[in-house]
Image (cartoon, rainbow, N blue to C red):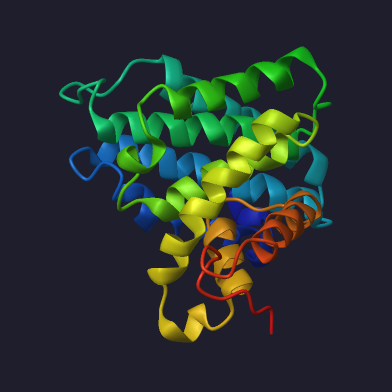
Length: 236
């Protein structure tokens, strides 16, 4: 039996984040569905903290939390929607795509399945299909660019061995990053990479997987024409 109050405060603190605000704004008309999505991300962050921190019964705790996150994701995606919530509505589609990306993150970067496995390829196809089935990406996600940035970043990481898909995600990230940085405060925006990382990490971030991928993303930004790059590329 897992008792969360037995875990170190530093591990429990990992479940706290600014992402619930971003997630709640995706579907303000349906707090229950938004809260369910927020809990999924709390579970993801807890999994990562347990993996990266030496705690008593850490392996058992991690396995339980992984399985709980997996169950909650599957229930969200396939267990039916809350009565009164229109399945075809943009807000529901945004939440669904976000949780689809969370499922991919769980298996790729928490469970760490081989990216050449049939399941990994299936999850990658699902995310790309979900993103491209709703018309222009920017239109569906207007006003929700921080959430979109995390989703695209997950896809970028997961498509490392697939040049076509990876370039698609890189192109979308190049279009999204300036909006994410423009929406930040001037103080934070003085260091573009740090602010972009802060937004991404507020959802779910595992350093050993995410930092090399961010290096690749930012390297791509640095080779863009000056007029097209995000508002600042300082890493100071």
